[in-house]
Length: 287
Length: 169
Image (cartoon, rainbow over all chains, first blue to last red; front, side, top):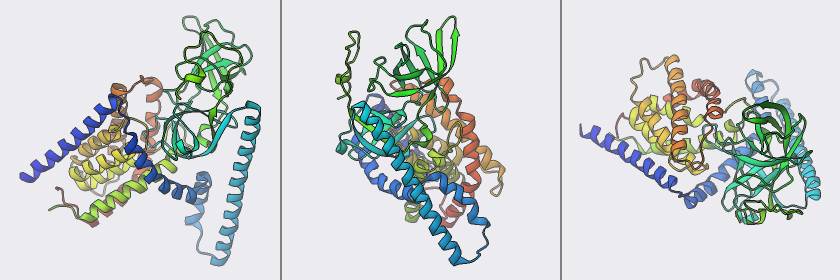
């Protein structure tokens, strides 16, 4: 019976620790020190796994062959594997070079100062926190709330930074909302994420005219400030219900499940026209 | 009798490997709706094989490790997985060799942890939760976790049997 009591005490102790941590978190403690230490200890492990199974898709595509082949000619197989591996890495490198080139072209036009990075991992939570970890941190000049982009458009924003890595909340995260502008008309609005579902766009003006195919770019509206002028997606469907006004679903221009090379916007150009009603100007946000 | 030190070492190593697999592979699989959660299935498997103490210990440690490398409030997954380990560990397994029960239990644990996570997150989070869009991922999560079960549960059961973890500290 003593054993049972000790067991119960231990369980209660662990529960108390959990609740204490949660209460401290709720009060705004972020435990950055512990998180930094855990991340710097863990990212080498991840890099190792990544280098073995990169790219993930090819790894799984290769799996069915493993069991079915009946140990044919070993040498031939080894040679084959070697060749195939060479091919794979070169195609991955080609892809990377291509997205870097596209990113470079895009950046040349945008006058952003950026730190480029690659995606290390997706967040390990239960599937409703859409965040990725990238291999750039304070050492590269990354700070909280900076905008992250790829060659195709907006990726998300930096939520926490450690020395060598940072966590990026994707624009499709259900907790994320992005201030946008309809490129064609200049109308402002808000885009909220819904996981892998389509993004949801609500214009500020309920009578704004939105057409299928309209491009949305980041604009000065909403609680969190993104660098302006980055493409977010195109309008896929417009629904105008009487009570709520116009709303639309948006197809993002970035493929969030295939993120690889990204860039953190370190400094964005000052907007050429000042917005007098701007709640939080770009220059003041999160520096 | 206390579990042998080997149990702790193997447990810790398993957590590190499972975390790495989860963040680099499982969370990135191009599956619709959601992603399988290896960590949850692992905690359930350990709790099924080792009972309450193993389940609680594994749940707490796995959750805390996952909390540390992700962005949600610290202690959230530790709490959720601890409760999963506690509940699953106290289930008297009807038959050890059955495939059916682990599948049912994993499915129930997936639902429980999903809802628990959302409730706690909503309680202490800074911003509200869009319940509709969040709950949409639940069926997929259950299906993917169940699909992992036949690969994880027998392996964990064999390892725990090898270690002869006693049902108490």
